[in-house]
Image (cartoon, rainbow, N blue to C red):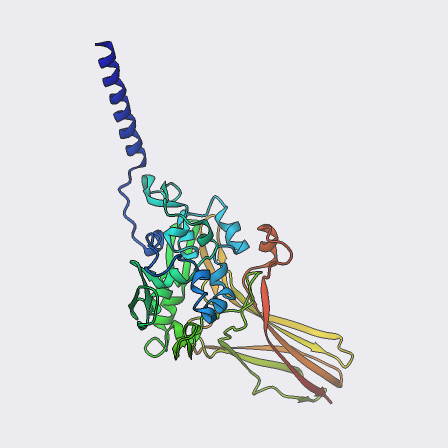
Length: 394
């Protein structure tokens, strides 16, 4: 009798424990935004043995080599991103754009305790692949769904299961990560608005993300295949490397104009050096994406001995205050087609001079690199434009 009672008591205790655990982990929260969840675990398509880009590269050699130079390949390993996600203020969902496949994530988030983004309910992911995680935004993140490789067209020669799905591979796939806008907490705002900027711009009906960032090319899409229409997989952008990558291609949406620049001045004149910068080519604002990005254009005047006589600069970008409440203080990003003119005025004695213009794209500041302990070799910016014009003061 005692043994029977003890057995029933143990079962009851276990049931109560399970009920309490379930209550503590259960959530009524329903995910509202696509970036709150990862792409569900994907099975390896028939005919393949891995979801890795390295495996894809055995046949799609050009695509793989291009992807390796892209910032997509560094999306997870990037030192700045790793520093950010280690902070207490970083919510769980940030990784969903940097390692989009659930297969790449150690845990699966099933809900939020008390609807709090800082209390995700996690369970171990039985299909977690640590090596796949290191590939960041890899081939499978875009091309594998439901046990098949998504392609623009299906080739009968493909050794793996394939499905033609141009709509899946449209700009909507890009916007999935490049348009995430939400007030997560009062001091944490996700503000990546490139997709909205493109939709509101002048090219929404004629050009999309792939037009510029994945230029069309005719070539074999796999070893031994015939030439067909394909696309480059550098995913060209600002061109600022992620330490270990250096894309051979970059996009410069801006155009600098010097049509009104005078090369001869009188000594009685105030020398006015002018340039106009235009967002000539981008279908979105410049800069776009991360609000920490900005562009510095520097004016310098040198004498015949290459000594600096005068300098000036102007900044294009956003200014934010992040604490105690995140809010945008200023924004002079250039809309598609918009221009901005900058003037430098000074008095110079007679002589020969050189006007030097240098334009730099910045991902972050040197102060933040130091604060995040990214090391002295982490690249904060690149020089993307340089112009020298001699002028004379008579």
